[in-house]
Length: 478
Ligand code: ADP
Image 1 (spheres, rainbow, N blue to C red):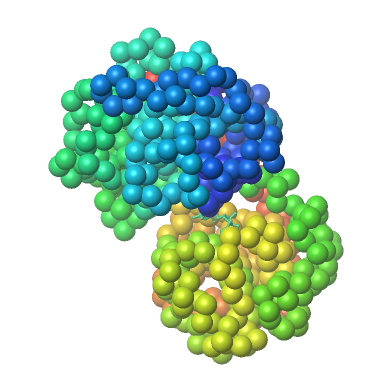
Image 2 (image 1 turned 120 degrees about the vertical axis):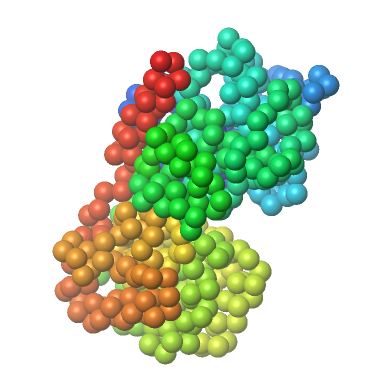
């Protein structure tokens, strides 16, 4: 199949969170199965063009915008750095900025990106069988293809699939943006849209031929008010087109045997070498380099979703247990401020780096004993999978993709510590179970072996996506 993968971020070019890892791993795995895959994303100013071999593709071409026949010239660059042709849409005004997200005009930026993607296909005369969009940034594509695109012989045969990576980000705007995107048609309000507004995540869900999210459990959870963020009526209406396909991780990109960011590379047979990484990580976080002390790690965006409130509420009790905790992340200013106070409050026990630092994250994955992921909700989560591959046992809330990937050590074949409900007591009880296992080194090592033996590679998921695409194509062109 010919597949166009449309996304706002992709490794190695630009990464904010797990979406970027998926946008690297899945297209490569699909290509390995023989599909013709291409990836397209905005060319943000911060992308290092020379480091990733970006080169201009063609002369600028016009992208229509608004209803008055106005166009803007757009340049496209291409890179082959990942083995999958990756295109970058450049427009100084919309993408010549330092951050990927977080601007008041983000909806306009991504609608423009979508318009450029559509124009680009026509310009290249390359028609995919499947257009695969991700998250609200691509929602416009689905509305456009379901309206204007229907009347156009070039676009009409394209089947569409939409992946929800997180229900919490929806992209809700006034409906004046329909005109900005060049949509003339009368657009019926969706049941979940407030009058006069468009919800771009909902538009992907409503108009795609098939919809999925990134774990089977989350696909069920989002049908309920607790996890559906208001879109559960729409999701329930589309439940027959809604699937859950677990994300993978790229086994080459995340390999403790070869990872150059580690001080000591290791595998399941040489776990004792992890102690060197642990020492280096302790030093990097200004903690005493004592390998006998259990080292807990948190790596992730510092937002409510990731369970920061639980960590902050239980801090005294957590550190009273004599452990070390290393935190690597950036996010909400109030969480950053609270965590910044930890090293002074818990000297020698808390190490905090408010930074996005991939090398340091790898050292922590390869040196920490326990990986904390007490997320309130979690569509899939990559951190816990990476941790397992690097021999750090995950401690997770029983939710979403965390349930689908982590079994508690109380079970046969367990690989981590799972708590429920989402409460301080349940969390601390899981910490205590982790510490009890830690005091039993053979049992700990056995759990590490099981964790490292788990197969989280993309191969199985890519096969599931292939069936998903075939189903979408059958629905689109019956
Ligand atoms: P999300 O997509 O919600 O951010 P995931 O667990 O799916 O969460 O993916 C997070 C990815 O981002 C992981 O690869 C993790 O290692 C990485 N990451 C998050 N924060 C940081 C950070 N501060 N430094 C380095 N890597 C980070």
